[in-house]
Image (cartoon, rainbow, N blue to C red; front, side, top):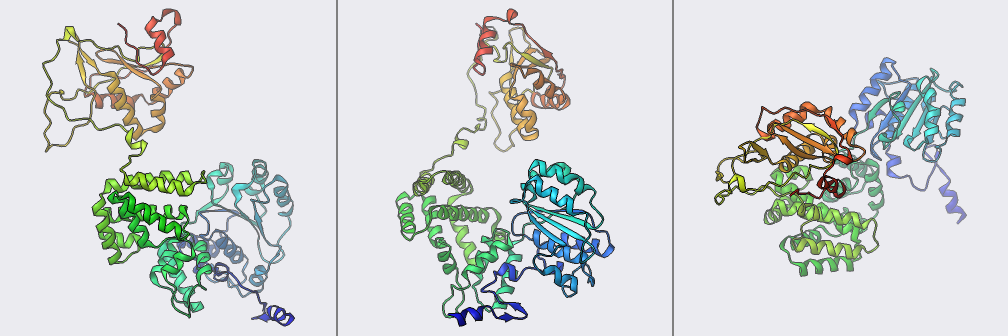
Length: 567
């Protein structure tokens, strides 16, 4: 036993031997040229080093495992290297070798997740005044900087804005949106991009060749995709499965799936086909088989979502799906045949159902039941609530019976006739084709417009409720913020060429003010929807006194959205 322990502590290549070094650490890039997938960032940093234009503060943002800390460490060595080679550190000079050692005083790495208080930042402020001991710069690398407290950010501001000439700050974060603008404005920001799947696969091929391990291409692509654009995540998975091979044979995709607790792709595709065909019995039997094999319900649901996504891509992009999904021709033909049988709309519905239930799994322990219900809903043609309540397209106009004479027609009073502070809108109301006009199937449908009615005196009356809905839908596409304020009001016609948008409640003045700032846009929208260019838009706030309100107006103000018809 002692002899074995002694062997572990022997030196190899001048360094103390370790039991094992993770692949992502062993193959961590040592120069900018070795960094993959970030050419834009590394080129700028190298040029800054060559020209001597080194900044005082940098911010590296991006998802996990894409190289933020690696780039920061390479940059720290490069600006201190005594034999810089085209912006890259030589990794051979005394400074580079010393920086590689743990505990060096000139390169300070701080984890903001565990050192997030104001006291730690004050400690930095006290130490930045001391010059470096090795190279030209003292570098502070603060990882997950968004975890700092507000007080810590405030303490960092002045030092970050005007640090000593020998200090460089490199901040790294996965959530730049949580950083104060005062911090963002003081840094040179570099967005570290998610790494392409093929770039990850190429890197893995190089590593596998170096360590002498064979892996099937399908398995390689699966692991690269499983990394989700993160090099570190992909290499961590590879680290776990390199010893799964038998007798030196190549690692297969089935072995990878089994190790990760995931179902066979053919079983998932068979389950998807049963769901598409509406064969609930076959779908549940397949699901039962997968569960009996010990497959996790959450992973099965993830694989189903991925499968339907691949089917949808195959259905919408054609042969380009082979390049998009990284699959061969045989796999593409299989996906295309299944997707064609389902249809695009059904595939969209399937994905909506599965995604909605995937969210439920996060807050519920009954994962198996949720998965079964999700599969049964998909088999039965279930329509998600969002689709069921969505506005339906207007039905084609059909011939109507003889019109009711104007003098006998009853026009309901607009729901907007409520006691409120309101914005008067002089707008145009477009006139659509009469309801009785037959539509030509070969012509594209004309935009929906507010249908005018005819009053007893011959003047045109606009369908205010319909025009309100049309304007609301249009704002949802063009200006969601304005739509929010618009939706609080009610539209009513006060004359042939004037509409009022009325508001109730204490925020009425604010709503009218917001709409007043967009007067021109609202006027153009009203003219477009009503096809009446004679109308103009006039926004003003009018407050009604409770004593002057009619009984119907008072009731409407209390009831709110319920339309009130005055007899």
